[in-house]
Image (cartoon, rainbow, N blue to C red; front, side, top):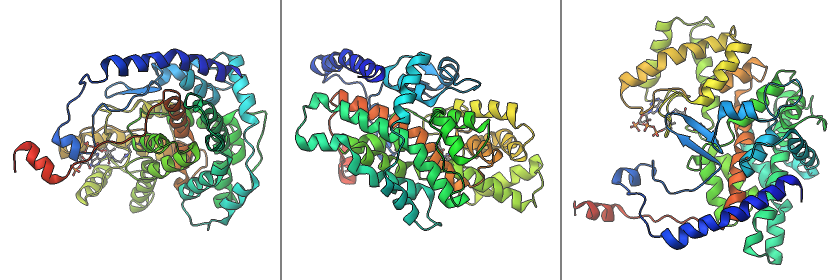
Length: 434
Ligand code: HAX
């Protein structure tokens, strides 16, 4: 076993008794009450999922394995000359809870490079799509097409001890994570560059190789690393993470689960919001004849959007109650690298203008920007102007957290998910209306 897998195995063995004790000794202890509002309102805030990979505090934002994002970026080993860490190091951290050494990261990169090769049919599946298909559809289908590669599925068919489920799941997950940037880059090149740049560079890490396959120069390699790292996980209850977890809880393999995760991320209230932000800014731009808007122009545009019954993309959050630290990290990167970019000026002005308007509007519980308000502008600045593609980038990052969770769910023997639903009649009876 390589060091990542053997370290993971030790952590799993150490963790299993904790879950067993909780179940055996405290299984019936009440930790939560559920209100009518939560039943009707998308289960907001019900503590009913368990994960040790990340935790989202409403005011502080996300922590991965106890580390804030600035700490993750500062502590994880970085490729020579880079300001951002290797994504492979993040995978190590999410799986084991340990900050890896440079050598441990090098081992993961070595192993990952050997898993990057795509079966030939995946290229054919991608090429078969019309060029006006949304890239998220192509991504989901490409992942789905690889289900026949699943080692978990093969071993399950042959008969496997439950305690070993995590091992082939790790193999499937690590292979799929390694392949996703290659799939993403191939989709990008098919749709937008007529396959000008397709070459992988086995000497480069996850983010570096992705930038190279897109044919975008430095510092886009660091942009990719940053982007994949900050999008990797956001607890287990968000749509993409929960969709992945739910599907895998029936013992569907990671190909089924990640394809489902991608489909959930493709909604405009979730991952597609990064595309929506850019589309919306472009709309403002063309309405104003490409001139940089004044603050009052911008306020009018925001108010018009709200009056027409639409949401302001990139603002608000189901859990967060302050500016998303993923927004702040990208804002700091932008101030350092693209402060004069015209679109960044739009984003900066929206940061000033939108929160007070949303507060006044009185509906959104969180008027502050989320990750998606910033991310598209950075991509645009480095030449990735095809904003339909942005959620593919999000998917590549998010898959790392979701698959880490799936591996652990298998290791800890979490059961098939099955919450209970009730009828409106029953709910009315419960509150005494009937
Ligand atoms: N603009 C206008 N209205 C908003 C709003 C926004 N940005 N954010 C919330 N609201 C509205 C809601 O639509 C809701 O209205 P109704 O009562 O009429 O249904 C009301 O305020 C209360 O919503 P909430 O409780 O504050 O927020 P939710 O938990 O229901 O929804 C969302 C959270 C992120 C979906 C929401 O804030 C939103 O639609 N934001 C814009 C889209 C967006 O940026 N999505 C990306 C979120 C981050 C993410 O998941 N990235 O992948």
